[in-house]
Image (cartoon, rainbow, N blue to C red; front, side, top):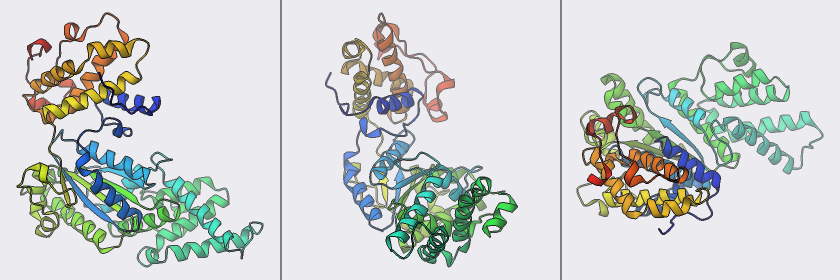
Length: 444
């Protein structure tokens, strides 16, 4: 067994990856430890991140069937974005909780899921506090105000705040007002008011009227102000040391299942977002969406709105190996048996690095490359031969095998692990593909 695991990977990173795979989930971090097939897009994504960190804006669409790795790819990009010191936010689009045509809801989810390399979600408070600290440092660096004069410092910071947010304040003066109210409440030790004002700034509804009055704002954030608040958030991020934001809108294909009127509004909202990105309104924004081919090509998705279809049009008639990763859409070809086996061996090697006692030697002998290939065929066979649907379940089952090999001295996976696929552990797509019978490894 030749280890492909990153030798410098910390035990905590390995554990987080393995724990997520054990649950059948995509890890939030550490994806570079076992990523497969990313070489073809690495350079293009690097160029996009460079564009964003230097004040530009980028829109990109990821397309792929279920199991092709859309979530994995976006989180892999998110890890690279964090290394470039960008903030990231992953928002799941859904009909009831986060409808795309309600941009105020999208903004609220963005602030709830906002993360940086140093702070997990929600990092909004850390970002805002860091921004005010940067403003204070800039004021003091000017030499006209002393730190020993709090009143003068506060006044100077307020003036600098207005200057930095002048563009945003033309369309959303409430954004700057809320920031002023948050700072005032924080300096006065009024924690409850500060918390409420920050919640309002993050788009939360039903904030106490007293807190809103204290900050000089009214009502709740609406659809039309959401884009201005996003513009303001980007300005705050930039001045607090984060050159931009990667915003992922995941599972946009759910728009196909909503009422036609809501669908049309959502598609138009997406068109508006793309146009605003390209207009230069959002310097430092990397907007990334994911969807199935049916969403991009079918009559109930992008094709329903001609202007949006034109903006997302890419010719995918050629062999996938000739795809242009700089195009507005990136096509994920999905897994083959060979790439599934490669993925499995990388996860096995990563697991073996952290195995206890003699576990690493047992893993090398019992979960060798031949076993991984056989196991991949078995899982895919249990899903009607649909390899593209298999990765999640394959990795979940493989980690289960590795756990048993590591912990039970007498366990022999070829003899003691009859592979079964139960409805309760399958997603809807996997369930539709699965056979009813159990699959024996030696039959595959």
